[in-house]
Image (cartoon, rainbow, N blue to C red; front, side):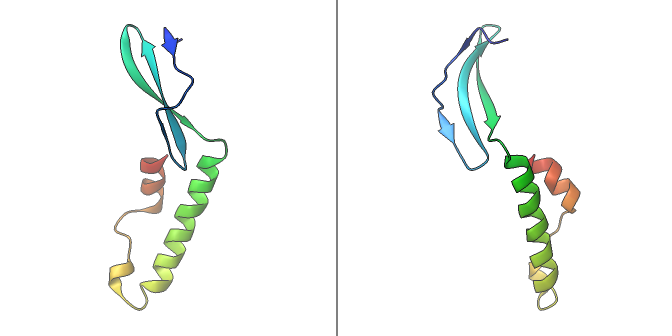
Length: 76
């Protein structure tokens, strides 16, 4: 698939790692998600919305101005 792929990551985070590769003559970044990161991200978003709902009883500043499913799509 790739013309060349560097197996040493150039960046890493809690959800994925980024690798440098060549694809059709162009240098590209390839983001590879850690196993299980998608499910963990969904759980974190669900918890975020649960706490937001509880704390927004006390103050409207804790309301999240985006739908849960929209946030899951954006962050996936």
